[in-house]
View 1 (cartoon, rainbow, N blue to C red):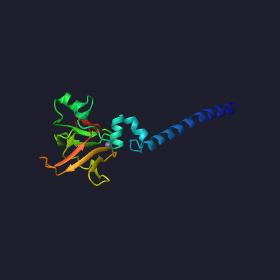
View 2 (spheres, rainbow, N blue to C red):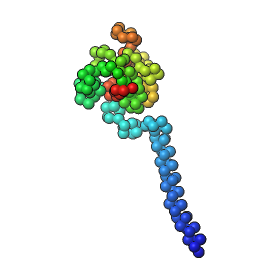
View 3 (cartoon, helix red, strand yellow):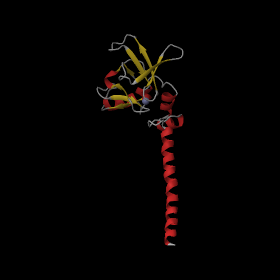
View 4 (cartoon, rainbow, N blue to C red):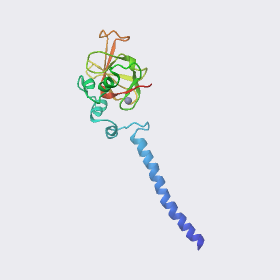
Amino acid sequence: MLMLRMTAAFAVTRAAYVPRAVAMARAVRRLAAATGGDGLPNDDAGWMTRLSPLQFAVLRNKATEPGGYSESTEGELEFELSKALGTKYPKQGTFECAGCGAPLYTATSKFDSGCGWPAFYEGLPGAIKELPDEDGRRVEIVCGACNGHLGHVFKSEGFPTPTDERHCVNGVSLKYAPRS
Ligand SMILES: [Zn+2]
């Protein structure tokens, strides 16, 4: 009789435990599926939880922030750089993807193009993908890690930089990391 009661108690405990373990395993699998297994969202709903509405519009739907927006808007990249450092052109650090955190540009590759958007003359090796626009007129640049839209790259415009390339990047697509 005692044996029977113990068995019954064990059965109850086990019955309560197993569904929890199964539910947890399912939740982990769901999370892995929702993030594509690499920690990044794989659908719009997931990205919306990580990005501001403007970041989502730019990074995921290829919108363009207004010219001058980054340098003239409190809280935005170039405005905050100027406020903190007295310049939009830090001497050290890295600019990272605002979507996934991948390092994209060294601070020293940022230059004054006068175009109203942050500009860089080269990306870190392998960090950025170039995709010709469908109309064949411009070349889009996206983050090599999460495919987030950065802007466009223009070549041979005559800028006195080592590459004469202008990576014209939306400020909202970037974060500044002082140490790199
Ligand atoms: Zn990214």
